[in-house]
Length: 186
Length: 274
Ligand SMILES: C[S@@+](CC[C@H](N)C(=O)[O-])C[C@H]1O[C@@H](n2cnc3c(N)ncnc32)[C@H](O)[C@@H]1O
Image (tube, rainbow over all chains, first blue to last red; front, side, top):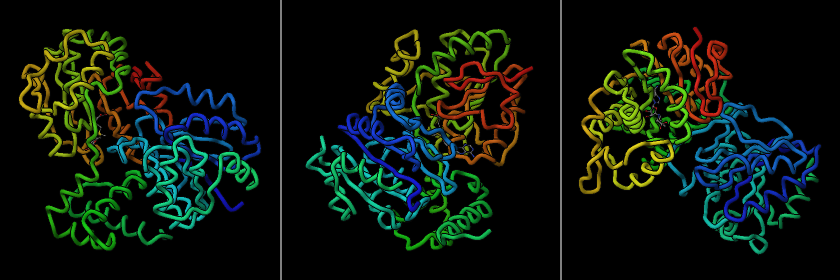
């Protein structure tokens, strides 16, 4: 298998698409998925529990120093940046906000690009800011595969559109086609 | 050790240079975090590569202290995580009340917001007069600001909400006076706080304390360093003393886990066994 991890960045409009994606992936989908979703600093973990109940995979919040495992979907905890170490474990920080966000998509994507190089897939979904653009550019520079949600199909098109100002992504797809694409990978 | 990536080697050499020249040891910090901070500084200062920064760090004091600031993240809040302070009030204060004198250590206190929050809480519980708070950090600039106790007005609304959610009993504004764009914390809150420069990596035990708060500091360390700092804390706590970590920090992976009893798992409050 060529790809070892998938990172996803999503902001406003994220609830719906994350529900669809996490429910659609089959039990034998092995590649770990790591998600930064912009949420309020004090939001609780019920949202993740809900996704977990509806998913074939294990959906959980990323713990600091946790080893990244196959078959899991990890979420950055509210109010912390999530980074990936080269030994494929998580680090958390409470550094300043980046692009007004903590967790920030750029922080996850840039560290993931360094850790996984060309074995990484980066995906930017719906959102109304430009977080993720710098990060996905770094993924491309490191040889990873880049995908954005087709802005025409996104609840908030600005975030995937912003990516287009920096790189030409490998794929521009609707959510349904992103899911189909991922399932074919395994 | 062989490095696949040249910039990893350069960063490792830079950290070595900082340590050997300036005594600050970042060699066991989270690598992804250190890389991010160093690359940011490199971009801001316009260096072509990390090796250029190395010679600058060795020869330019001002640049070196700038870089130290980059590597010390002083982001903090008053009554950060209100539910943690609630639990502190409910579960830890009753233990503290049983001691005639109380010593508390805030390790990695940054600009002091956490120590002031503690002083407020202790005043309300009638314990402050018999307490000494040691508030330590290795960042002298942050300590200087902590000592002044002057904070930006902009944050006060948020801190007031935090304070109220944490179970505060008074009006938060009674703890400071406003002055232009700032608030100045009451002198009575400062009187029992000892601000001191202490490096968790290179300095040792300096007191036996009843309570340690080390929140959002260990996340920046690798596992080995976390373990050795945990040993430092263990040796600084009296039997039955209490250790409070940040809400995403865990003792579970520490060698000393079995030496503590969990008092509040969610709020990461642990009691050293007798
Ligand atoms: C993110 S702040 C945490 C502040 C506060 N405890 C809180 O949770 O809001 C981390 C602090 O740890 C300090 N720190 C980092 N490494 C340290 C070390 N080796 N020794 C002492 N303090 C350190 C930094 O200077 C910074 O002020």
